[in-house]
Amino acid sequence: MTNPVITPAGDPAEPQTPAVADTTTAASGSASRTLSLPQPLAWFVRRWKGNPLFSTGFALVVMVVVQSIVLAYQAPDLATWLTKLPQNWINILRNNASIGIISLGMTLVIITGGIDLAVGSTLVAVGAIVMLMIDTGSAGILTSIGITGPVAYAIAILVGAAAGFLLGELTGLLVTKGKLPPFIATLGTMAILRSVTQYLMTGRTPRVPVEFTQIANLTIGGQYLMQIIYWLVLAVIVWFISKKTVFGRQVIAVGSNPRAALLSGVNVQAVKRRVYVLLGVLVSFAAVLQVARIGSMDYANAGSGYEMDAISAVVVGGTSMAGGRGTIIGTVFGALIIGVMNNLLNIMGVPPLLREAFKGAIVIGAVLLQKNEG
Image (cartoon, rainbow, N blue to C red; front, top):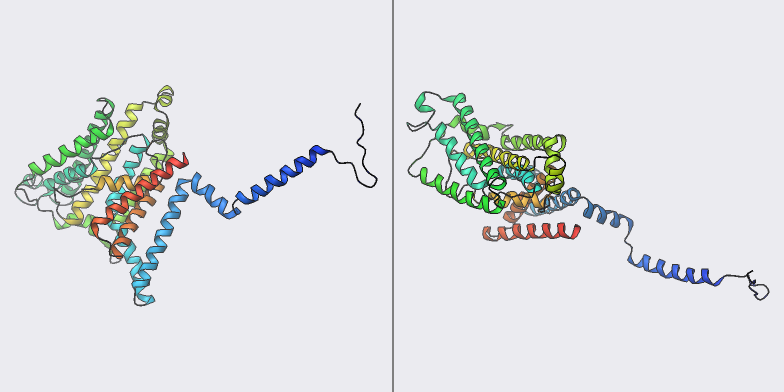
């Protein structure tokens, strides 16, 4: 039987243990108050760490605000700024449409744990094929057999898409059947495709029909919007594939855990081949737009650095380089961030040779943030 605690008259009996607990609680409460963040800031931190799409979208908003402020500072009056801002955005979207299209396919490749360094060389090779098909000179393949006009353009685009398909399949086979690391496989094809294209096109100057250039240069309301429209349409299609189809779910499964996906009945090798094929087809569309926009192609330099730009857009958009995580919407945001950054650096007069340094820093920062989140 427990003896009662005797206390002086007028003082209520208080057990000692709760008193110690109160002291501890008070101390911990003080520490908690010292370490806790304000509720709005805590919410922001949770969203930033837990939702890559939120962090990418917020970064894009910040860059757009900074860009708008810089443009406002340079504009002589409000009317000029209001006119210049939308035109500037149309230029950004148009200039980055090809990279944006390529980055859609690169997203799925990286989600599976792969990478493709040959997208720029593939673009050059497919572009050369398309130009040879529609060349209005005597050396034009379709012209020589009497096929011209829209029919010739449609055939050329289909042949270009088939070439992109086959080159993507080749890369997929090297990775899956040849067991080559994606970096090595695509590094090799990057050099082969550009070198062979330059050799075969030496001395050739295909003439692109003016009508064909309307594919990219047709104006809507006085603005060159066609490339932007193609990008948005393809983004919706690839988003649907990634989110609403069995193949899209298999891509995530293969990137997250290939062995578990295999044991679940997923044909891992087929999925990896298909993402490279899809990327090859998307690169072929970008090549068609490149040819249509410019009317020619510099085989030595066209597409140079596109692999870096596409990978940057994908990584900045929140796709994990380790695979298993990524979104098409995030990649579109990432491409816009890269485009706005390049535009902002240009407006601010940063030398072109230094702009790649900023791009590299953004990629490194994005990967470091991914590691911290993991």
